[in-house]
Length: 285
Ligand code: MN
Image 1 (cartoon, rainbow, N blue to C red):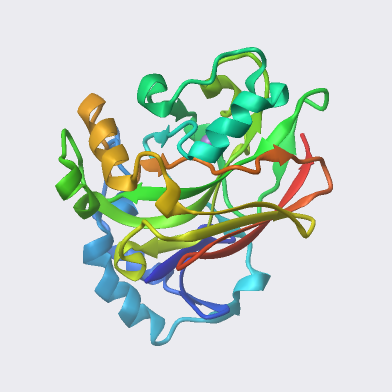
Image 2: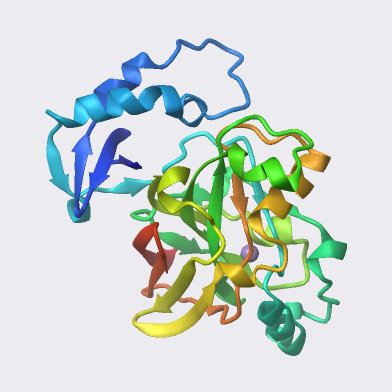
């Protein structure tokens, strides 16, 4: 099942190049009051909502996907966990290019660990990436985004795939420079999630997915998730050995080689097999 969040917080089941409005099914969600839990309510209840989504789709209004404004598919993730240099060829290019490493040693992920991005940086595919620092390199990084479905604390690699609700395409936009990653990657609009949420059963094994990114039609990144240094189960197990992962938490699994700068006016096209394609415009803050 593919679920899009669009326009003024409508929810839709994606069917080919159309989206069927199933927002009415959200009335089944449990009522909440302040203080709100550290989990995304829709993702936490996704399994229970599925029959309602299917029922609502029988009579839901249809729109062309191309005609709606796509928002980030997870509305309220508690955190965005991200894997640095998790493809060997990206580690090699980062070490070779001063524009990426800025005279800092680029360590292997096993030594560097994971980092966090601010949730305020999240946008959807139809909301532009906005550049603030014109004097610096602002790079694209395509990444498989994993959406956690169940509370995960100290889970084993063998069990880790059972904690995934689904997937999306992630763009881990980055200002190059000497500061900590969490600062340079947490600017408003610097985490793009889309085009929609794809449930885990539609993707199956997350290893072996082709990913591809172009900028204004120019090929930049092309790789496959089988080349991840630490695969998805290992990342979930490792992250959950440090902190609890909650439903709706996002795991950005790292970017392959081919990162490069974008400028206002560019359009990024990102594709991941079994998930989809999204076009993201770049503008000026
Ligand atoms: Mn990244």
